[in-house]
Amino acid sequence: MAHIDFNTHISVSFNKELEDLRNAVLVMGGEVEQQLFNVIQAIQFNEASRAEKVVLNDMRINQLEVEIDKECLRILATRNPTASDLRLVMTVSKTTTDIERMGDEIARVAKYISQGIFQIDEQIKLNTIVLGEEIIKMMQKTFDAFARQDVQSAALVFERDDIIDAKYEHIMLMLKDRMLHEVEQLDNWLAIMSGLRALERIGDHCKNLCEYIIYLAGGQDIRHTSTKKMQKKIKALISP
Amino acid sequence: MNLFSRKTTPLKKLTPENIAVNIESLSVELNNKVVLDNISMRIPAYSITSIIGQSGCGKTTLLNSMNRMNELITDHKITGHIWMDKRDINHKRENVARLRTNVGMVFQQPNPFPMTIYENVGFGLKLQQQYSRRQIDDAIEKALINAGLWDEVKDRLHEPAMILSGGQQQRLMIARALALKPQILLLDEPTSALDPLATLFIEELMQSLKQHTTIVMVTHNMQQAARISDYTAFIHKGELIEYTDSDSLFTQPKHKQTEDYITGRYG
Image (cartoon, rainbow over all chains, first blue to last red; front, side, top):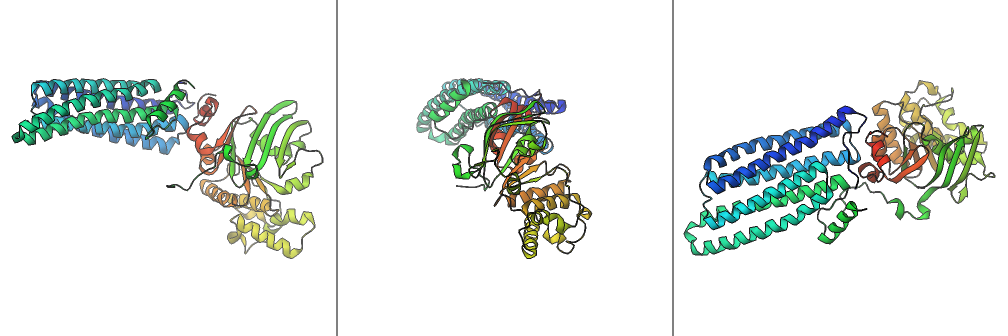
């Protein structure tokens, strides 16, 4: 399908504004990706200080959301964008909300680690790190698809979420087993469950982002459609 | 659940009785230059249809085709059909005077005659010489009410039209067209000479007029087309590139040329 060029407007300043908006999302995405990397490292090496930094840095991500949203509002008011330009501004506004929530999920895990209530045995730790690495990969693929407005790559990210869900379920089974045998540590298990759920939710936010990318690049809204209909729409976009 | 009142029937779903103007393979050559090339489009009744495109693309020629104004240019060649009420208005036996009564037109610049407000609105009716004074008075009042001007001028109907503001003059022009009870109203950039407030008055007026009139408008203001028209046609170098409901055209245009034009990219 045709690639949308955002730098071919007659107004050079409008080109720059849209380019800056796209770059801002990638900057915000990069920050969140780094946060996730740090939290996985904190789990691996049980580093409370690193987790504390992650919690503090979440403020910066929140601020980025506010700044980007403000710019979206300004562009809507001053440029009256249409077609792909309008889709870009709307996509960016919704995307930043999801990225900010990814940041919140990461900060939640970091908070548990910094408070010392995310104590897990080696087997669960190993599986959690594998899950975390898988989510980082998914996140990278998502932002890559956004940068290139690539419908096909965005569609592939959906499949990655199944891998994450399977890994998450596997860890939950292990957790249930531990909970049955170590009831006295229930508070700890509940925190771990909540943390793992937060990690799994990041995958769902990546999926949301991919839906926005498909809307941006192809103009097709695939939210809340069956897998069959969604695949049909994506196929039509990739090879019209 | 229907949360939003704005809803437009897709063109494909319109039945023949919903069509006010059916243009078939219309080509227009003016002064040996092809201005419109094989245009086919169906304009829905009781709706607002905008025609957009660059200057010189043929928008006004398309509008003028609907009441045979192009024939006023000496060197013209027109082929194709324009159906209104099962009549081909391009047919040589078509009564042009009657057609222009049925298809009113308002131009970019308000052009009131150097007469009173009353005489301006009643001009067309008097010309027809078939109405009583009482009938003309009633028609003038109704036209001025429908044009949203009655309350502002009812006490000075016999004052010169020239004393009205630009926005009022343009509504007077609409009233002049409405006095003849046209089925179709053609507007050629009706608000381009007006300030934002007067523009809003005209836009509101158009929304109420479409309840009983089909409106076709040429505009350079794309936000206006997106805001008030139900359907939009994009013309480029005499060709109809895209014609669909305005919501689709301004959010998901199908053609790159449309996308480039409405987003202000290099054509």
